[in-house]
Amino acid sequence: MSNSKYAPREKLRKLIEAESIEELSADQLLLSFVNDNVITSGPAQAQLDPRNGEPTIFNTARSFRPHNYPRSKGNPVQNVIDCPICRGNTTGILDWIELSNGFSFINKNLYPVINIPNSNPRAGIEQNKTSSSIAAEGLHFLQWTSSYHDQDWHNIPLKDSFAVMTRLAALEKKLLETGTELSSRVNKDASDQELPWFVSIFKNVGLAVGGSLEHGHQQIMMGNLPPRRILNNKRFQEKHKITFSSYLLDQNPKELILKDYGPAILLVPVYMRRPYDMILVLKENQRAYLHDMNEAEVRAVAQGWMDATKVIWESMPGLSKEVAFNIVTHNGPGAGLYFEFLPFTQEQGGLEHLGLSVCQADVYQTAEHARSILDVSSG
Image (cartoon, rainbow, N blue to C red):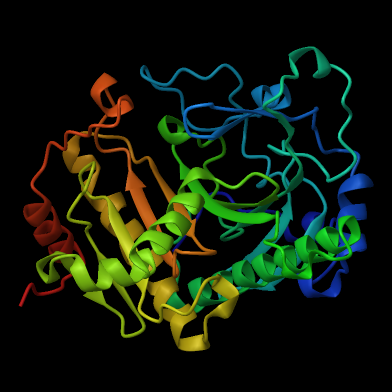
């Protein structure tokens, strides 16, 4: 595959602080953020919604993020630039791996949502502080799927997708270890306590769903605020005595399976909120994190990411929609391990914001069309 743009190898090599994330101790990882003067971060504070405890993080520095998606009538962007990754203008690199075509790397987010633990500047946020205020703390990373601008999960070789997923799992493990160490420093008797740090892994593609740079990447955050769906998974397990991934494998109609990879299954949930919502479920329900997976499971998950994103890229133009989607990882207590693929195939209205979704497609017809894209028989 020929690509018109790609990241400059030699320029980026000069930004390497570690060849692999495993080389770094917790202190070295924190210091890499403290010493990276190009990171643009302001004080981050969260306020809790009193109805359900869901946090909203306030961070004005995020408004200065550059964008390089093409301008469109529906998505005007004031600060459109050339791809900074393809110009080699970014932060320190903490993990690097060669691919069959180019390379993949992990670096620090230039505009992090949250800030370094125990070093937030509090000036400027105290006036908004209430009894429900929480300092939003943590670390925010980016993983660039490929050095080639136009290559991402839907069009990279399986060998490369396996390598990228392996490094994503390695970062997750390092951040959980770092969180454990930070917790022990705060409370020496916290070994039997629930860890206060959560690792969130997600992907935004397209302006409509929060994307800013179109060069394919994943985002990884270790933070002190648990996302609502992480808590929902835990509550589900406490109520039903099984993980949600186990529930999906047992209860979701078999007709909605898109592809079986052996260790994992790609399916359309029967409660599909928008057309082409998909979930990739790991069959082994004792897995709670990416780094728990064995080699066969990592390969199956990588293949599932490739197939699900292929369905999205091929189906959205037929709906007269620009390609825009999110991927969110459900890890940790109560989830098992599963991944949601959420294309922006249908706008949200007031009813959806009240918590009542109206889907404009038939779930079984959607599954059948997705299987045809993947060339999988429904039989």
